[in-house]
Amino acid sequence: MASPAIMPSMGAVVSRVSSAAMKKPLQFTSRRATPPAKSRLQQQRFAPISTTASLLKRHTYVGARSNKDMSKKRGESALRRTGTRWRLSMSDEPLPKPVPREQLPQIATDENHGLWDFFADRRSVAATPEDDAKHGRGWTVEELRHKSWDDLHKLWWVCVKERNRIATANWERTKSKLGFGEAESAGRDAQVKLTMRNIKHCLTERFYAWEDAVELAKKDPEVDLSGNGPAFTPTEFLEEEAAAPAEPVGNAEAADAVDPSTIPSPKLQGEAPRV
Amino acid sequence: MQPTRALLGMRYRKLRLTTKDVNKGFYKGTGTGAMGRHTKYGGYVIEWDRVRTYACPDLTGFKLTPFVTHNVKPTYGQYEGSKLGPKDPAIYLAKWKAENGLD
Image (cartoon, rainbow over all chains, first blue to last red; front, side):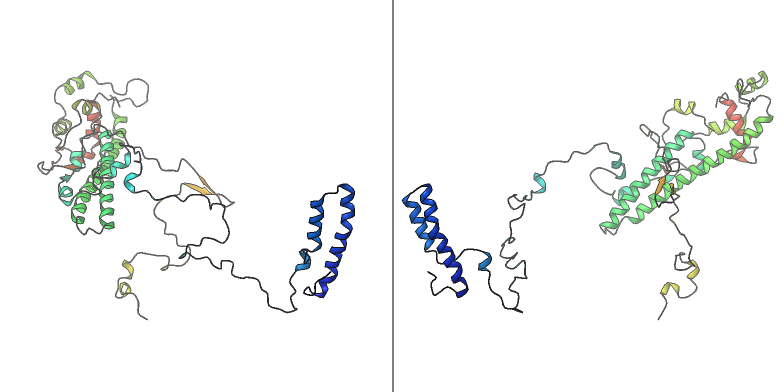
């Protein structure tokens, strides 16, 4: 039965298959005798070779070179857009397409965010040198002495914000290498720093004066620092004096309180301890 | 080899001190204090009473600016009869009394 083309080692296999095929018709006929089954058997009988995989393994000689493809990406090319050799899990996913910036949805931002205070205005990153140069002088200590604690505290933070604004402008100027505006910015910053320094001076001075005044008050018969009852009990004699301008120093100072800048409101100033 | 130009002459003392100028153990830091402590396991515990907080008052309606117009000449205090001037505790006490000694 084995054809001469088949290798001698396979002859036995083929004859075994054909002998099995010769036995099979007996079993099939016992179950059902159908002519198409017979014709299929005839095809099997004339099968040229065995299809058993293990026996079809290619013969390699001992010491032969491996035939494996060591290049796992052979044939892949970005230029020819071949894609990968194997299907990937996301091969069916459509790629996102870039959208122009104009078509992107507007990002909602807080109009009153505190970070806006870092800029001179909403439209520009830095003030122009002309605008930067428009500034007065810093506050003197004497002017600040007439201000309350709250005013000085607020003024300090106004200065801090101003310096933040100047620093932001400086950073932008350096980043974009504008090459101008440093002198104006530095001049402005110097005046703000002067104000801040004078605020510190004024508060230190006030603290020392308070410390000494506490010592002085301990000897004062009108002042009771024990905490029981009113701290200040003016005698009649002194009340009259207080009604009249008896204290030239204090009143002179109060009369001198012509503040160069805008005063928040006279009522507030009156309430706050102005020392 | 030639030293850096900054090192030529007598300018070394005027340069900033770096870790390369001194022996080991030199800690320069950045002038900022610690806000916690290291644990013995290598972690770090933040101590919230050391963390800086900034009490910025409400600035709405506050009209003062860091600047005073040049049209206003700087004023000088008048402290007649007081040697200490603004540091005089008597003036402080007198003012406190003039404001009814409330605070």
